[in-house]
Length: 334
Image (cartoon, rainbow, N blue to C red; front, side, top):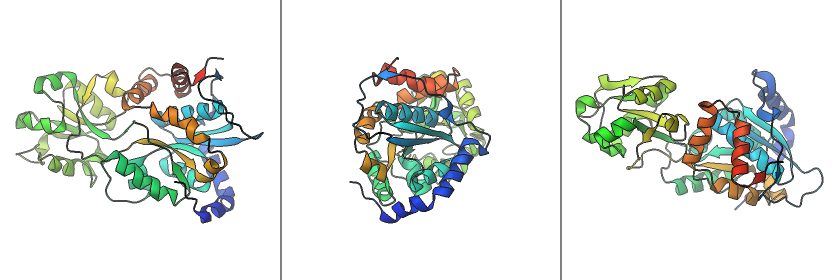
């Protein structure tokens, strides 16, 4: 399953200076502080320590939005529980710097989304709605680049459409197809600017569901383009019957929104997976098992709740990750 691209091995050594500069950027250059500054102490749980040589170490990285910060801390705790000395390089500003860290060997472990890798990093023009097919395609392509994808988590942080609880009940909405039952004059819709303009965004989605922009589908004057945060509020207040959301956003449970089923499979799959630098996994193959149990329990509902605790309740990502790891028995309180 693991194919190590030999030129990548040479590249790791040749890019040491670049990686160091990138790490420095991530740690301080943009005014951001690494999430590395705090990881709670813990006792042993169900995650078994690996038989490791003295001084075995790995570096964990993540992007700098809420979900990634939580997942990054989960990865740090899991690797520490397995006995590694961990360099916590989470909270890196931007997707591309994280990608470069992984490709160059400047980091060993991260969480990535299948659709993001396929469309953004690998340059494909269309996503693959079937999660298994999307994962297989990404794992094969990234295997050639020296990265190994572990089995994907149930979490699929994709685009979605959501409605308020009141409107779901009022119009009987459960799927995107159900929007056709809403009277044309009441089909109000809110999206953020990027989704409105993307080649694979709103317009093709509406055509896919036979609700094209216009008087027979959704009139243009009933489509509002708002900042993403304002979209959630507009759905909640009923200013828009339906709006664009991200499926694992913590504001969905906080506002009691209802996510409509993508029953015609328009959106690509964005399942989260643990990605390893292939050389590291060859050296420490036990890492695969350490993360398998953890990853299998991360669902959409769980991630919405964990994101909510940070974004709505104001808790620290490290505390949220720690509490969940203890709750699941992976680790224990010290």
